[in-house]
Image (tube, rainbow, N blue to C red; front, side, top):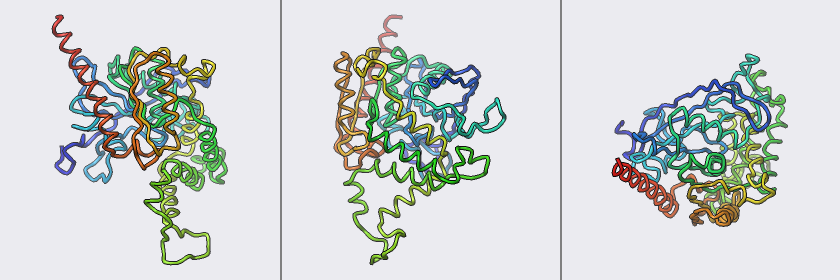
Length: 391
């Protein structure tokens, strides 16, 4: 590994692409005849293939969770604080898989990909995805890699929903689940935020009903507004206030509508950056998958009944100032797991950073998460010793 990288970094990583030729039936009633998933791996798969950990990403996430793609990269993967040698997800112990979901815009088959039936990009005709669809495609990837059972499936926010779905759809293939800053279903308020963001995109004159790529256009304004709306919900009032307060960019009011407050500048910068790096159709698709997720919906609203298939222990982590997916939502999941007779540990971590806290360093969060992963590693070691003793 290059000396320019920190000692606890996985270093240089290269994305891989898996192509699947067998049709994948989707919840919407459509079928993908073939698809590709882009993914990265960190660490080494052991001989028993028992130490694999699957990382599920959030709305704007992707496969690049840790390490660097080049020696000149300024920023590592989005969850580098928790993946690497000696970190919570210790790559000296675990083989970590992180992928870009179907419908994404970072290499996996999605709206910008070519529809083999037409020879043109899917655009707005790409099928609407659900969390269950993603999990089924991830199971195909696990099969391809020869992984029958994950030591853990881990995810924050929308990734936490995928981890839940794994334990429901494939209970025999999951030894542990960690769901962080997540919810078993969106509140009406959260659905409302998503709808405002979608309308911002769909109302952009350059959206062209989703066919903007054929017009060589980008609905930048809509994406910018969608990101600004979302970003406000990811931060807490405290973190926004302590970071920006009512600070002005200059020494006096301008009595106009251009940027005057530092927080305005920050949000516009976030929106501008996002509008050139993320696909609009993918944003619509991802937010709909968030809206649709509701395991209890198929069981008359009984979340405990939906969790009946679960066989593995859960770690549930929430954050005190997260108002997007408030601690009460995690507590709802914990209560349902207890009612269903499942094993669960729960921690509400003190943090001032709101929903974004699951991405950031935090001593209590790191301690709890590390202990959970160390227990899994210990279970693997004991299992190996027991197998050796019976041979």
